Image (cartoon, rainbow, N blue to C red; front, side, top):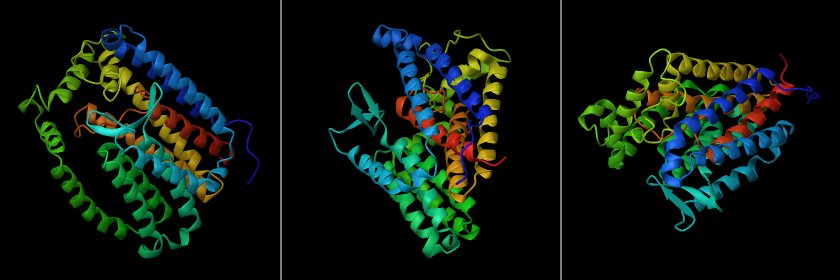
Length: 366
């Protein structure tokens, strides 16, 4: 591998730090009243978010200086650890139940979400596998099927929690990587038919998922129940208008909109900063996507390209799903908004992923 450049992609660095800054400000704005009510401290959530962001930036800077090719050597043990964590979270007394899902493991005063680690671990392993077996990827039995079995094993463990949103992001990200690696369209078509049937089965197997679908189709049929979240989200976005109500002036964060500093933080952005603020945020995400794809395509080897595209795909899919939920385009999934939503595992792992992407940019030829 050629020597790395002295500096990473500066535009990507600026974009990441700008998104983080907006995220911290909006977490405080959206959570102050909740922190005051629950913990008698309006700064409770933003202090923790600053800690998460600080540790994430430190991790990003460290990872940014680790040659991305090094991750190939540790792909198998990393994936093994991720599977162990996914199994551990299912053990009563080890896994913590929040919002009906056993998705967290308590570590002192904090908690980690193993499914977040699995997303990155599987991207690293799949990049290694596809780069080493690219000549077999057009063969269903030798190339496509082994990758598929691994992906759905991870998906199955995540669904036991259950966490459909994270599972969907993981599967779609891996499918993007398989497609870019050269898998046949016919394989995806056959898989799509099975996937639709399986997805319908997952929805029908859990009443709360059916309720989310019906609430999505007509939220006003049950405005105080299943349709409550999306209605309150739209009530936040609508009054924001062009310029917004002003930073800190949201009304929906006063115990109307659930999770205003987490899954629905984009609704608070739209309410306080208006269409202009929301558009500016979407433009920043667009810059991230542009730089990420450019870096990945300019990587000096197949592993680097697949690794970069996997990371960019993972983050972009989360952004698309979260924003679509908030504006009522798809049912509620429980996916956080990268860089902005409150949370430790998600933010830290996202910034670690950015460290890998920035390291790839140091070797990219553009």
